[in-house]
Every structure is written in C-alpha cells, then in structure tokens.
Length: 251
Length: 267
Image (cartoon, rainbow over all chains, first blue to last red; front, side, top):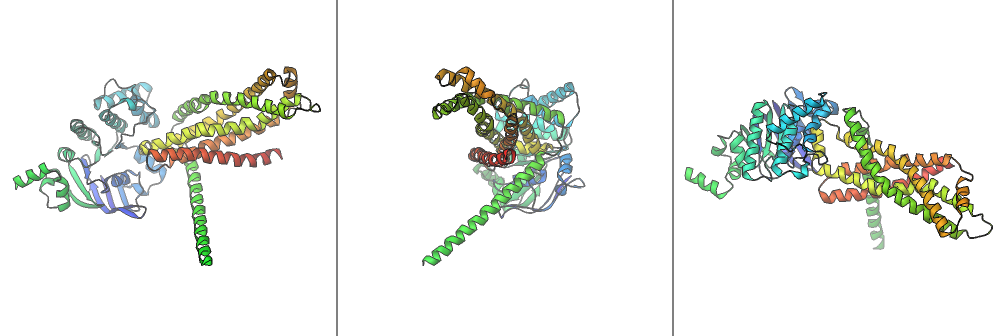
C-alpha cells in the first residue's frame, strides 16, 4: 500500500499541495482527478520521489520513502514504473532499445532473455513489428504503449501514470485505459493514474481521489462519484452540458 | 536631491551586486553538487562503456572534419602573416616555419580548437540534455533508479578527455602542413627553409603543455555545457538559452584558465 501523510509542497512560495493525507489501495487502479492546475501531477511526482515534499511523509508499505537517501531510493525505484504525460521515450534509442534499457541497466539476463522479455512486453501492449522504429516514427498512442511496455519491463510493484490519455483520440484513450487496468490486475500492481478524463474515471476508477486547489476534496469509487454531494466534484464531473442534462433528467 | 539619488543608486547597485554574488555562489554550489553526482559509482559498467564509445564517435570523431579545416587555414594564415610582417633581410626565412610551429602548438591548436569545440560540442551537449530535461526523459531515468547525471554526463566527459588531445595533435599536424603548403605556394618561403624552421630549437615540453591545456578545456566544455542543460527549467526557449549560455560560459572559462595554465606551466 502507498500512503501519504500530511504532505505539503510549494513552488516559489506558492503552496500547491496543502496537508494531503491519503492512501492508495494495493493491487488496484487508483485515480487522482481534478482540474488542470489543481496539483495532481505535483502529488504524483511527490509520491514517486521526483519532487521533494516540503513537509509530510510518503510510505511504500512500511518504508518511509521520502526520507531515504539517494541510493536507498534508487532500490525502491527499481520496483516502480512510470508513464509520463509526453511518454518520455529516449529519442536516440529504438523501441526495442527503450524497452530493453531497464533490463540492460539492472539485470544480468542474457541478450536472448532480454529480447524475449522485450518482445513479451511489446506484444502485451499490442505493439508488433516496431522494434527498430525510433520514437519520432511512432504515433501518440504507440508512444504511450511503448512507454507502458518500458514501465512494466522489470515487473514493477507500483505503476504511476501521468495523464495517460492526454493528446489521444477517445478510442485510443479507452484502449490505453483498458490496458492499464488489465496490466494492473495481471501483474498485481498498485497503480496510480493522474487524469481529468471522465471516461477514464468511469471505466477504470477503483479508488478515486479528487483534488481541488491543492486539497483532497473527495474520496470514493466510480459508483459513488455520480451521486456525491460535493459541490466542487459535481462541477468537475458534470462540467459539460450533456452531463448536466443527464443529471437533471435523472433527478 | 542629488545626494538622495546617489544614495538610492548606490543601494540599488549594492543590492544587485549582493544578489549577483549570491546567485553566483548558488550556481557554483549546484555545479559542484552535480559533479559529485556525476562521479559517483556507475550502476553498470558495461552500459556506461557502450555509452562512452558512442560519445567518442558523436563528440570526438564527428569533430575531426571541422578541426582539420580550421587548423589547415589557421596554419596557412599564420605563415603568410608571419612572412609579410618579417620582410627584413636580417631575419632568416626559416623563422617563418618556427613561428608557425610555435604559434600552432602553444596556442592555436589547444585554445582556438577548444573555442571552436565549445561552440560545436558545448551547444550540442547543452541542447541534448536540456531537451531531455524538458521532455521528462531525465525524470524517466530517475524513476528507473538510474543516476541520470552520471549516466548522461560521465561518458561525455570521458569521451572528450580521451579524444580532445587526439584532436589537438591532428590540429597541430594539419596546421603546420597548412602553413607549409601556403608558404610554398605563395612563394614566401622555400620548402627546405620551412622544414628547417619547424625542426629548429624544438622544445618537446610545448606539446605536453598544449595537451595539458586541452584536457582542462575538454573538462570545462563538457561539464559546463552539461550543467547548463541539466538544470533547464521550462521549454524550447530555455533550451536555446541554455545552449547559448553553455557556449559563452565555456568560452570565457577557457580563456581565463588559459591565462592561469600558461602562468603555471610556462613560468
């Protein structure tokens, strides 16, 4: 389980996260939702250790992650995979080299075993015959899938996804969502997804945390989210006209 | 009235100076902290070895062309200028060859080549690492548990420390050859006199001096440019600025360290 206690983070004296206390359920797809600028990415990056919190604690199981030294953090990070908003594939490496990179760096597998693992991960995300392509030759959806393949290549315990559907068409976005959910169940990972896409929320949100202006405003699941009394959450969930009409007709 | 204005100006000047000093010290501190990270134990030697080999090609072998062209013409111009400025019967003509040799070995092949490489290699390193920063590729490395500073910068430093002295030696050979060809073709010196001149009163230590300077300059170019790229914050505009800063700071530091090294090594 990942737990966050009293976490605060500010940039240039502007407080972005206020006293965040939340836990994420193990083996499930946890979602952090909220409007743009609400602090979702800062929270995700603070949990993953890419931002140093000003105050508070981040626990991975029984390990106080944010107080560890650089080398101890490195060990925990080998159990994490992350899908970045822009995919963050290494431009100078091919698809195969990108997925192979963590295996080269942290395992003593033979070249044949590495290739086997790379092909398994790429097949799992439905990328075929693209091993020798460079990231610049891939579509947005393919880049995301290759980034997922890279993230799962070392069998991580934790998967972090920062806006996995941003810049994708609705069909591809659903495919990526389904893939994240399937992989979470298949590999028993604790997944945290950062999103403001309501389709994702209703498709894969087993636990949902709503952030408003740096505060945790609501927690629940995809079944509870449509029936909440939280004013800010309702503004966010029923933001478009169609959703508002559906809600009023429901009442 | 004037007194007040002066007081305000002095205060503003003083405050700016203070801020400048604090900023300078903070940047210097960040630079040394980065170097500490760069020189920490690599995760896997074999991966770093491969990376160093590709940097040798990218930063070293790919620079041979520009160094060769520049050195050839530099040598040619030095010979012609020496010849036209020493047109006096009391000076023996072989001094043209001697002047060309010493100018190239002592200054041009190490310092001018370093300034050229600061432009080519330095901007390349800063923009490459800066782009990796703004596209979250460095974050991706950190997330995997890789020491991004060491993985990205150490192979570049090793590659330039190995290859830049080779570039300097190439520059010396090509520069002197350029001077010889230009001198003979322009008819300002005979081939025999030029060859006699480049052999006359040769001090082998000058080569050592030139190579020591090259090593220091190589470290400055790579580490300063990598520092500028590694701490880029923003988008493509900031990457461009980092690239410019890398060239400017490397060039200034090369010229400053040139003075210090010359005093230390030749005094």
